[in-house]
Length: 399
Image (cartoon, rainbow, N blue to C red; front, side):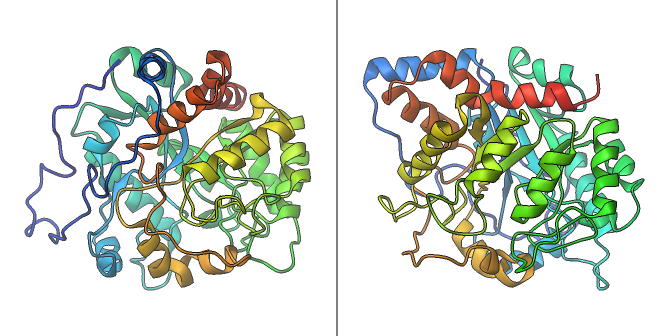
């Protein structure tokens, strides 16, 4: 089912230069030379059947366009509007995607670092834009997820990278749930009231308040994410929560030794409790020794290692991509978002972009091409591009 896209551009109901500062944004289609994973004509026909017939889910994206000149990123963020790449999403093959509103760091507007306000502002302006078009809608219920494909639309799942803005008030979980958040991380690299982030040298594990938040999320029907947690905090969450957990965008540290990825024991424990791991594709994360230049080939090595370790029923993809110069963005944000500290590890050569998985528009057609060309069965492909994630949502969301 092709998406019903009418050409809408983000915030076209407002006047550039009058209602917001007009900053030139990166293209969401054709920004770099597209790369198509090589397949035969018969295999491409099967790829298109899968895109037409199966539910395709990205467990983690930032589906917005950033400035063409990344040096303007902070000025763009202070403007308080995220410009969704609708044209790119229209050709993505996605039926459902998890859209991430960070943890209050996305806007960087408040002089006192008031992340709680930033989250509400970011959500409100973003959803205002979503409500002015017809292809994408906010998913609040399981039924909302399942109606996307038959209607030729895309369901957007509201997500926060971390619960940092809850500070020490557990009722704030209810508030963001009411605004449409259905998945939330525990920490974003740095420690907070709930536990330790992955950049911390000493991991104290899930705190007493963190356990209260886990309890509240499970009561409300909000999925828990551990992607940016330290190892002990991640393990504590897995062991404490009676419901399964998503590690929506990560990978196996055994393949590339950086803290952004998890050791085998965490991945095994997550799978043993019914959870699912989404394989990451953000620049310079899921590299391998065989493929030191980050590309779809190195990403799929991480995928296959994880499948061999925990089984096909517990793996999916959370590419964590956007529309624009992602490498340049990482450089600009390294200090503010702890990215540099999180990714210290083996030396590597930078790429300008991740070949084959550069943006949300190209990720899943290429993932499916790779899987088809490597003789994965339709049933296994169905699981890893959507059904595994749906199983976790069916067990964690309210009915």
